[in-house]
Length: 105
Image 1: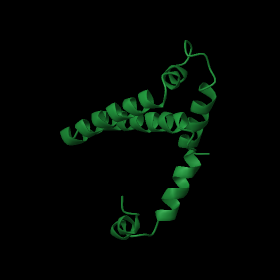
Image 2: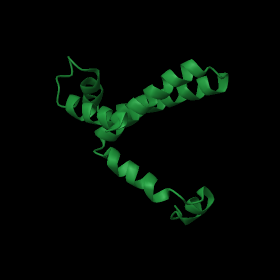
Image 3: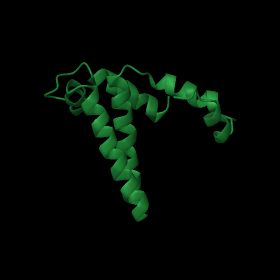
Image 4: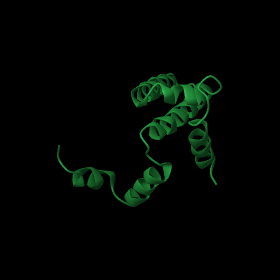
């Protein structure tokens, strides 16, 4: 089991916890919109560190991004396995070809 799988399982378990005893439960209790907002904040912080070129801070922020992505997925009942299956489906495809094959909005 990968660390991402373990983290996703921990987040799913903490979703059932008392929000007073768990940051994850507290965040999830605020709803999917707040979880998405927090993910966006963390992504911006990671971008800032990437632009600055600070590897240590980028590593820290990237870990925050992954955690908050998994929380956001939990909030919308999207399984990590579904995301990984989508990545597997795309594997070996040209990014240009994959994007061209997407339905037009």
